[in-house]
Length: 250
Image 1 (tube, helix red, strand yellow):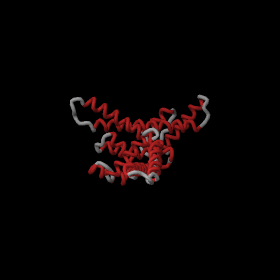
Image 2: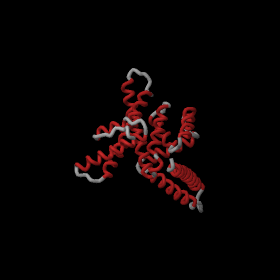
Image 3: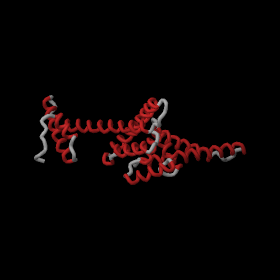
Image 4: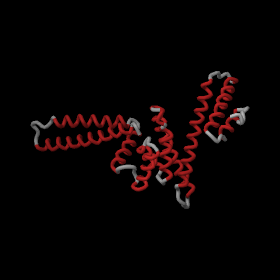
């Protein structure tokens, strides 16, 4: 540690930190960044040490987000084949990729706020980038990344292999249900809508079941059709509710 250069300015501390070859060396210069930033805050009348660390932490988050979007844009551009109007196609592909990357990042940050220890932001970004690299569209990569969820590297490799072969990580029906559930959940009040649908269909089923007595043949047919429709709607909404509950840990 004696041969390490001691930075005299904040800019020099940043430069030495970014050029560090090891995690230990980076931490060494990061501490100087904190201290020099703290001194700068003190000279401006801000006397809390937490402020410098909070500012650096926020800067690190913004930097990692910017690098994520840059990598998304680069991969989206590489996925466009040669075409007469390739420049416009690349621009549209990058815009779509950034839009879905933003949606995924928002979901990941909310997930990490609920459980800071799971590192959701890094894992969802990893999923999205890996799926873009194998040629998935931004839309497919978004939903597949959500379905794959917070898995380890081995599970991700296995899921990506199945996606290469058949287009979805597990069974086709299971993926369709999960994707539809995500689309509903992304809607404003989507979960409330599904719960409301379940209870309305349950009420309709119970009401229709109590209307058998003293009815004509035509009315019984109508009530039977109502029972079938209400039961089917209740079953579908129940499946989505179960899917929502299962997706909490993804």
